[in-house]
Length: 117
Length: 112
Image (cartoon, rainbow over all chains, first blue to last red):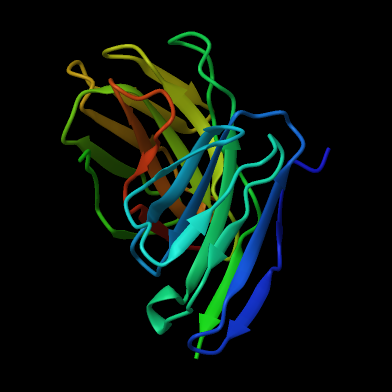
């Protein structure tokens, strides 16, 4: 069972370049998330999706775009890379909350370490 | 928006000592989750607390959810070197079933 798969694992971008971080999950989860993690700063939510065709902004969406055309895939697009986007990016997914006590843990991918120079 | 604060940011202990990290939310939470991230790894789910005043144990780890559902704690008894990592709390506020807001985490290092 693959879980949440992110590609690439590492990437170096030049300022102004664009790229797409890929994320796919095989658990049939409705909810998917993109977080960025800067050293000592915890996880900040960039975008999230509650189902195919539905996306919404998190805390730090500027400079990023997402799409959710299928349940499985939730790619994150950086259009004009800036040094401030140097970070580790995590994609995660979880079940819809059926009941108040249902376990809705988030499953994380291995992360993409991005450096913008 | 909702904020989740976690203290301390760092904690260094000798193996065998106890460790506690605290989590406080600016809003009432529907549930709180705890995750562990090993150095260089990704966050891995530990537990979810839902009920006011709930206490759950996993071997040497004890998790508590406050009566007002705005704070939580994780206590590790007799730390081991395998406990090294960053511990995050993550809360879902009462109005959202899907938005997880993470604290900044507590980095635990253990001296053997």
